[in-house]
Image 1 (tube, one colour):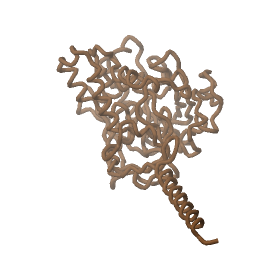
Image 2 (cartoon, helix red, strand yellow; image 1 turned 135 degrees about the horizontal axis):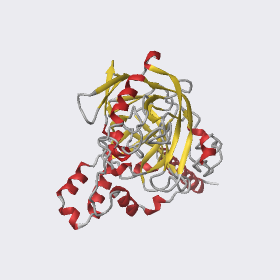
Image 3 (cartoon, rainbow, N blue to C red; image 1 turned 180 degrees about the horizontal axis):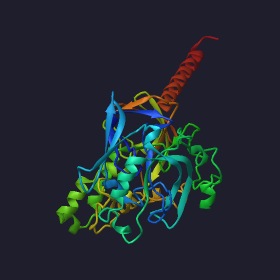
Image 4 (cartoon, rainbow, N blue to C red; image 1 turned 180 degrees about the vertical axis):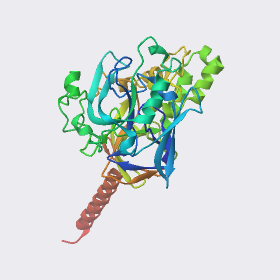
Length: 409
């Protein structure tokens, strides 16, 4: 039986995901996933008030994240310093007004590509609020030369841990930028920023009005298959040089390579699941919850990093520091060219962006069985039923025709 083997939510964009046994679908995404982000408000070290990702500030991954639960539901987040494990800060996933700074912050949801020379934007989220205590704690940690070494020659940053908009809590409307009702495609980043243009050509992607995102880059939910991941792992080793294969550190790096580096929400495995089969699922169920496959996910430099430290996972590989991307490009060169993504996004592909169907309040659980209802280019269950019906009708017609020919006139 193929099923869900792990569910991950990432409370804070760019930081570690946390494994949970179940998660509720809220506003089209997993509850609390990427509901917070870190911004730098001075503009000294990073673009002003941009939602920082692991792409542009990889050492954010070195801050440990854990969840406390109340009656089985996530309630508090605890962050632990990479410099001192006894140095922590805890905050509520539903902070009270007195925990929030009074001044609202407009968060820029854009960035620079790490696979091309361009940049992109998916709008501005107004009325985001900074959490007082975690923000003060982050300023102490993130301004340390030991944490942000590349920026140590620049003035100190003004960091805030920001909660998603208090006035747009349902989320950003993905259908504005993707799907049959999206705004026109344009490479003009300022038009993208004000919502007049999209960096995507996604008119044929089955995005619906209920697809909402918080601080996710593109889609509400990401799904990864362990069968596909293990194939990638094997190919990294296969394509490595003889010298790499003799290098114990490199071999150990391949063995310890984690699917979490792809930052998925749902990991599936088992049964008769075939490698890369998930890329064909257009309609499927996890337990009782219906999903749609949206688009395969193009990959930046993050999958080549250690998900717990942000450092390069294969720093000395003769393949490349971006060994996973190089291997994927060799395995599937045709997947690297997808005009729907545009030049700033298209690249090596791994895992799937998916959306939930009319699932508000429903719960997915570890152990949920996968039922593929329809595949790209046709249906799975429906096609089988149709084939059986066709054969039944054809055989019945042939039997009746034969009987008519034998019947006396």
